[in-house]
Image (tube, rainbow, N blue to C red; front, side, top):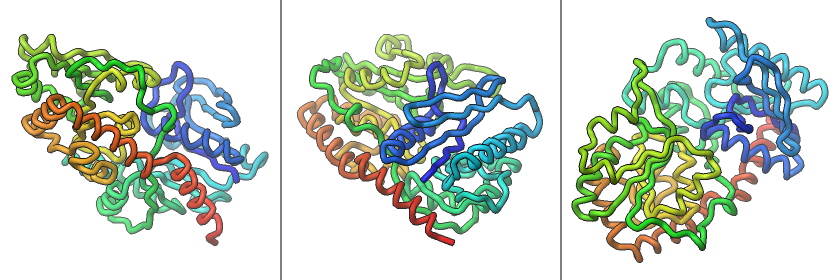
Length: 380
């Protein structure tokens, strides 16, 4: 079997990437270990073509388009040309991409086309109460119509995308997962007492504003609590920094208890997880957040937003707390409980990892993916 991932986000040295890139790299490496040929084709962040290898995974990064208008079409056409070259040398069975990937692909191709739903334009726009943009909406609908198979990283993102697109398609739920050997409790860790970790993009939809607003109440009951915020800044359309916006309304007495670390290499996240007592990620909306999975596998007492996909991987009150992400008082109450009931919090954390491994064990998830591909290839 030869699988090609169409993505611009495959991680590499000195390259920024998000959760989709992390998922693709994990899958690509594990598929390669199963004897599957894996290629990755995407657009470079430079104006040159580059080729590299990640073990036996072959990565083709094509020069970014010089066009300002219709860049997406130009880049897709060049990716299609590269796919033809690759197919001539080693026939491709599957090309997989995210929601917008196949908008300008031909309907008939010598390979099957799979969309992995990580949360596309319709999903995030409408979940956050916004109207989809017409051009991106058109592209996404065209992409779904041209795909042959669909994998949803949560049942929530699957059925909500189907509802918002008004397009009936069948999908299989296959959760994201990560290396359970890397993300595991560190026996020699010494978490700072009463420390709280938030990590991810520092922006409104991640719930960080409400978490910051919860700090006065947390400090009233736990005076030495400290919130550590790790992640890259987000910027408003007019260029203003979201971190500066947050800092503008934090009371002076609270500021020493809230530390901003900025963006850190992803491999360092494990250390931050190990060195904080509680992880608080009260997102307003997610498709299936990798940060949550990392925290669960690290056996951390956890608080997340009570949102659709969260309910699929967290048993509220047993393997973590799910809270109204727009209610600072509720956020504060659960964090205070975890900080004031440390033995119970630690026990909850251990139960969290046990449950996460049962649900998200890499061997199980990889087998589900391969079975999906094989079943798709048997269809006419």
